[in-house]
Image (cartoon, rainbow, N blue to C red):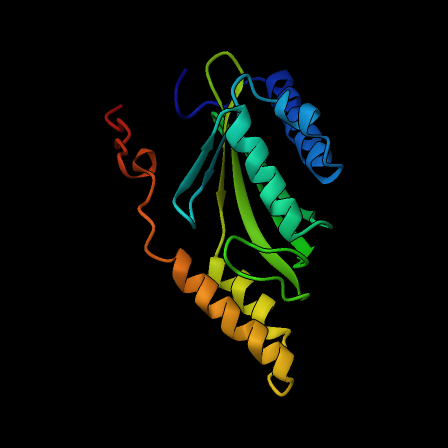
Length: 186
């Protein structure tokens, strides 16, 4: 298929339904239903340069993020179709009530604009959810909600900074570094 031609309307509608079901099932925390949208679950978090590959890793990712943000939700801004993907712009929302990696809970809410690429293979199977976002936007909202005059909040702020620093410098997943330029010769 030419890179300049979109798939048929039926294919685009089927992809869109699958993606919207995926979003709905994530909010409902129905992990079996969410994972059933993939033949092999695979998430790429570009801001963190991390990959969660396979059922066990993706379930762990879900568990970790819902411990940190048990009320996690989203608001879809736009949905677009491309040759091999559905691109969704959305607001991710949540209250930081549990640890986010080494960052202790702040009790603050965040509302962060994100983009997710739901990528399909030639057989119309969802093979990757690739998410782009700015980590600093989330972090500034989480620590920005702390009262800098309250000693307890200052302690939380200090712990958050220490936690953040302990997470910095991790090696990026090589699967996200070893990219191949597209063939644009035609």
